[in-house]
Amino acid sequence: MSSILRIAASRANGAKSRGPVTVAGRLASLANSAKSTGAITPEGRARSSQNAIRHGILAESIVLDSESAERFSEVLSTLQEELQPASPIESRFVETMALAEWRRLRLICLEKEQMTIETRRQEAADLSNLSNDREVEVSSTRYTALAFRALSDESRAQELLNRYEARYDRQYQRALNGLRVYRADKRKDEKEARRARRAKITKIKESENAERSEPNIG
Image (cartoon, rainbow, N blue to C red; front, side, top):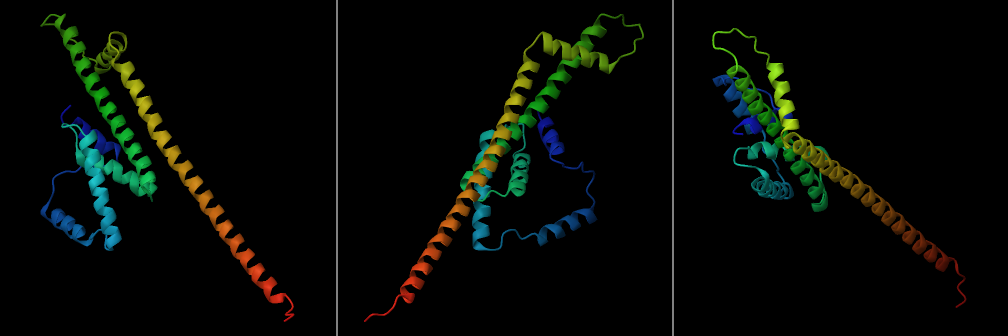
């Protein structure tokens, strides 16, 4: 699969195609990088350090040799920036989403590679049946259709790809829904805790007022 996954993952996450790098462009890039200092406070630095460690562990577990750990880190970072997990439990939901999304991207690349291989095989088989001196019009759509039919009828590859893609979509959605439910429950618990504190304070004040209002019979 070589670099195909890196390219597809890059495109899927909005990366732009880069042409030749000029000296002026490189200097401008370095200048912009120098302005980004990252986390400043000790707490921020600690969080950044923990994120880097977790990114590394996850990348080692999921990224294949033919894939890009940097691209996976981009997928995870994008989700973290969007969803802003505020606790280990929330981080786990986001990481599950990133793993499911990475596996889904891998399937997209595998599907393309399978179609490419089968399309070339169909074309070679078709052309080998023709005489060498005969002029033919090669239709790429024809061979793509033949390849799709072969993968669908003669192999379970297409069926399995579709099944696994649906599975990873469900994992992604379950994690997102789980994060939403967790946050909703947490907000509810915090609201109830605030209400209980206010009720307790009100009760204490009422008790103090009652004590002050009692006649002094001594």
